[in-house]
Image (cartoon, rainbow, N blue to C red; front, side):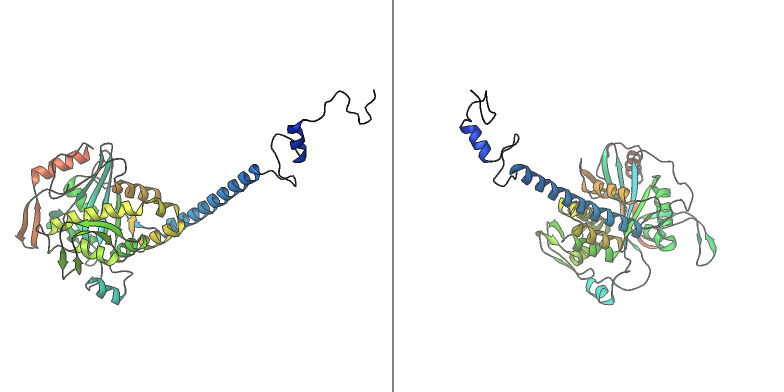
Length: 369
């Protein structure tokens, strides 16, 4: 029998085939009425959204990176006094907090009790060592009694012979280069990189990340720095944070206590700044970089990836940061340059040898943990 429709040898469509025909089936994926695939379209829309978001973030991040790289002040020449000590194992960063008032208005100076005077001096000096055995952060009290190597004084045009003085005097006499040279001369550590931030940059950086969560074990009230903080955990904003890290008159150990406080807060700041919210959101990253770069000074070889590695080391990711203060045996020792802090020769030598050889640090040095 002839099949007028040309369907000989086929059987009537079953229920499943009828449903497929009703939905306009042409392949393996059901379609809605009108011929549109349901799930694949939603999938494509999701993929497009993710790609667009990723591209936007990448473009913004690249733009921010390029801007920050151009703005980074690489003005410090660590080879100004020659090659320095033989490099040991690991990497050593000299981290300096200065009292530079650049970027602060007169009103800011009064509100922050930042004092007067021009120029800049060191408010904190630390050596951050990173290596195979973890990270060590060593505070060098600014009143440490050290030998400042001979240098040329551009103000007088004369060569100044080596002499004993306070550590922060090296910065006053010859800036970052002479300070780094002095640290190398007295510790035997090769300084690989230098990073310095002033008052304005510190305050703005803390505010840019919304403050830093910090815990105090006692009330602190200091008229000179303006610190007025209650015991317990709270978020410290820029002005409060600056007052805290500058105060020393309420510390039983004076400058040693302040050095330990500065270490603790710097680590907390680094951890807070490295939250995923800050790193992944350019709207958060830009203000942080803009604030930090305002008074950030680094060495000529420092780039943004190296700077990022320094901050990651401060966070303690991948291991605990060991924080110590240079071991001392005398505080408030009277000298021709005022009252100073003298390092404990034997314990300091052991600490510095362990760092230079990138071995685990034993003992607590001065105050720290």
